[in-house]
Image: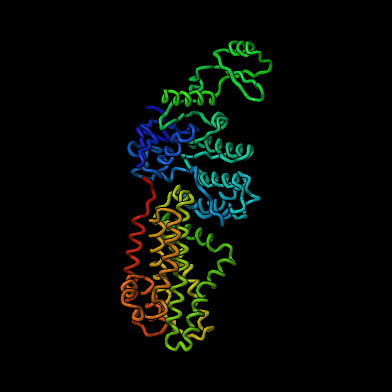
Length: 290
Length: 243
């Protein structure tokens, strides 16, 4: 018996009416109890994939199961298990953060008293207390985004699907949200998030998948993924005000190349997820264009 | 079932909080929009005589038309195209619960607006007779007109088209409907159109109640039938998932 899957995606394809193939026969599994990152450039098909996982978009073919429940056939059973933060979602301008959390807590299945208590708790955890009585019209974009995260997690769901949850957040707020996500994971939640922020992916994710042009280029544990990079080490330096990099298999190889270039100030480190991401997505474009 | 009922109440609460803020704007909207038309019709006629209750009925229908058809259609339309409906759809809520909650909020507004118009009737020297049927027929009027809003809100292909349709259905059509006078006064070609409008039957039914003449049951039944049609079309077109 394999690892139980929180989200099981089987041969999922989405072709829109205008002919665009947004997702091409995607097979992915998000194990239970992990934070799974879905990475990819703009237009890769991440949000289309997420919208099919949450049941907002009907796939052309294939299936999605959340904790064993078919999202397409039984959305009324699948939705209560999920906390969802869509990429494009907006708060209600006339409502306060407290009202948002309380009302959406009830929509997500909490009782009146539990929703009110949880709203107060989240206002504290998300550092929103000073804004709790303000109409959302007067909130900054970052504060609204934190509020949307709070609305997704208000009912402490078993599966959390977050589409770019920390976009627009300052570093402190981002770390607050990361802390909440780690806490939820430790309580047993499974989290799928999409992000452009490699630091976020490396900080939070146990496993990742890299998507481009509707296809999965690589997926697996983050250490396995890093090892796919052609080069193990990277040296970075600045020349004429611009950042540059050289790559190699060993620390010594990279240092040798830097010194042959006459570079005196440099940093050598292991290649990161971002390096693999750039390598894979650039390769995909080169292969396509010849 | 309990979750459905709770969802309806939550959506209604959310909608009422949105539309009642700021409170001064809500109060002005509740008072300002229906009363000038009543003022105009009342003093244009001079001696209203037995036509007084018709003016009140017409003002109520006009007010309910504004708050339900125009306002509700605009909000449904706006929520679809500004990703607020996306937020609601991300919750485990049935689309019918969402529609019912929005309609419930519209009904509450309509009852408040109707109450304001009724309270102002004596100020315009108009006497009306109240009966227990007034509230259910007002509610039926609001639900039937909310059904029109539902059709607009779920069918409009874009924000701009939806807003235009809301203005046409909520203002333009009501002004062309015989809400302040009987259908027979219209030219024949407009009478045919008037017989298709819920506004006509709503005004006739409320006039029958407020004048004490009765005979409103037929209009109420037609209004109920139009309500079923509008709600069926609106709910049937409502898609919670995109293809």
